[in-house]
Image (cartoon, rainbow, N blue to C red; front, side):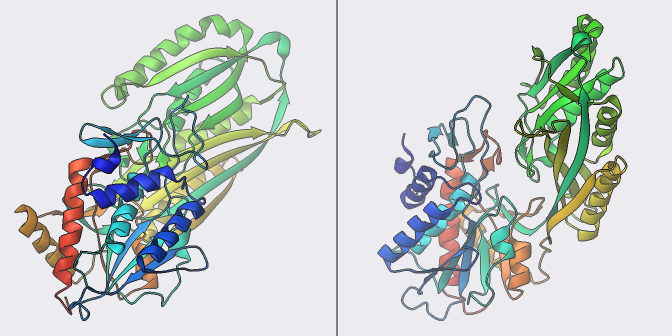
Length: 498
């Protein structure tokens, strides 16, 4: 069944178009051009600020002109992740979305339901001819997934709205009233390489694959394996049995996605190679035993590769492995105030070792790079986690930089918006939605800093596997999400104040 046959038709139409237009972070221009052209077609005011965010503005339905002005908000970009072996260029190729039972997913890549469903809903509202609503604006931000650049640089005094509905959460039936803040932590460690003793050495590639990965905020509490940390564990345990030297190290692709795959090439003494399989077996068995319930497809494999000319020496190798072992990863603390909510976490999203280019005369240099995403409901706890990472790597002489820090979104002291949203949901579905605080970087914290008078709330359909090729969106939940959004707009079209 094509997406165009799903209900609500207008939302799925726009989501289908969004999938057909490449729009990874920092490459949203073609999709923005479509939105601006569509706005002109329907007579909706459209403009952009200097960073590239889009503002749409639509007059109230007849008789609703004095209603509370509202803002709908989502981000335009998507996370580009694909399975090993999937041929896909996110800058040129459309997402191959398809229906699988009650779900829409994509062939071998992220789907972009985060936040494409929210964008599609906003376009369906803004370009509709028959919905009842008061004065309404839309904010479509750019580059959310790669650093929240759009929210950071949002133009001030641009909006007239008083209430903001963020459509970027991933569990239907839940209303989000707060979120974690975050910061990027970047580690750089230049290392000198030494010549390989080619006559007495063997090169081995170790691959950790088949992990689920996922969103480094929403999925961080699920106990999933981090490929970078598991690979490091394997290497460190091998180093206790034999002399090893790292040649190459690559894992993860995004600092805000739990890494699903990691690869290392090491050099070992020739005499140790016959023992390698026997030494690896208990290491792999122990990891399988720990992760079998949540990571049924985990695979740790060995293969022989060509011997390189240069390697890290043993001291540098062990220093790096111990620093990675010691650095914090996963859930660091749960909230004491909000039951079941992660307060602070860290994700080692990317690790790489890049040697000098072939055309450079001095090839005995390399750069180790690591990228973390650290989150917390409390800014001081976030900064403390950064200091823990800093301590681990400064001990081996690495440079550590924290960039792009953004605040969390604290729950409002005024319950009026939440109570209204609960009332609308209950009138539709005869149940009260859950109130949640999400351990992810919604833009609401930054948006609230720019527009402190906004009352904000966030909701969305059910999306699983965000930031991974397992991403999928539940079709029945999209219909409920849409009906709830339409009913909310109608509810506030008759209200001049909360």
